[in-house]
Amino acid sequence: MRPLQISPETAQKLAKELNVPIEHLMHMPQHILLQKLAGQTKDNSTAPAPDKNSGNSGRE
Image (cartoon, rainbow, N blue to C red; front, side, top):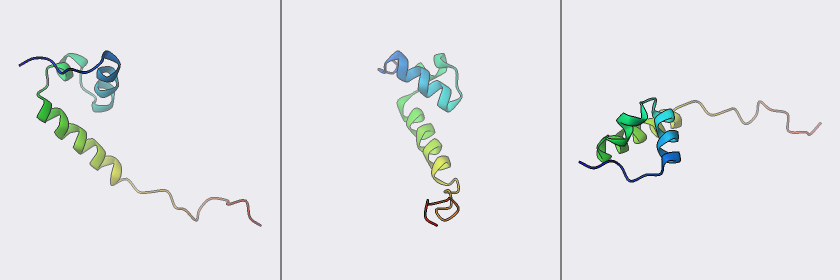
């Protein structure tokens, strides 16, 4: 299996976001990486959205 074909900058960002060492990320199978990314976006999308009515809209 060959390392992922991504730029060093992308690898650093992904390693930080997924909280894995960059060495593990570079040798991670692509399907596993995609599963982790999908899980990450799923976690972010289930976070409560900010209440639209809670802020000051500038109208008085």
